[in-house]
Image 1 (cartoon, one colour):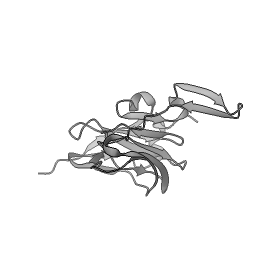
Image 2 (spheres, one colour):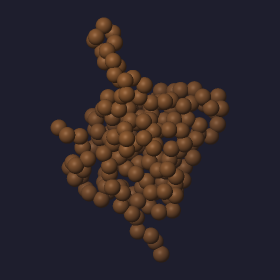
Image 3 (cartoon, helix red, strand yellow):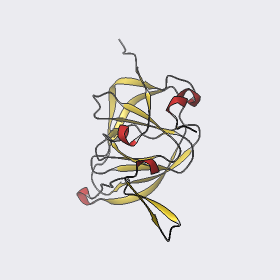
Image 4 (cartoon, rainbow, N blue to C red):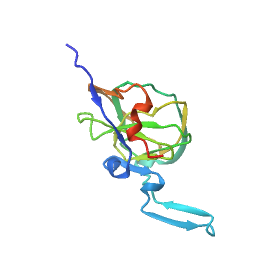
Length: 178
């Protein structure tokens, strides 16, 4: 007998809502904001902690290109990086989804990231691989490079359906106000 997937609601990505899993990388998440470079630039200071030094690792900057996904989408696996954090900074204006969980046995949470919002997953945070929407999307990724096993994957005992709605317009209530 197969178990039917459970629906996941898509939440608005805010610093407070995402705090159990990591940091929001966006101007609205900054605790300190100040002018630099003779007033020609604004610094949104210290938005995330890069954790990467364990077992001889170092911080690396990579580029990921994610193919767009369509909704609804079955969430059947999660991964985590036990040796370091992982930050995703979108290079496009397309929205993307972030699915995270405290553990593979707990119900995941799904967040809609809008243009200008990046995330930094804490070391060991369970998450789904990148979920670009609408268009192929590039992301700058800052994470641990080095020896040791730094990616654990697990198939979920219970599948979840993400976005029972069919279009992004159906998610309008979770988008930032215009």
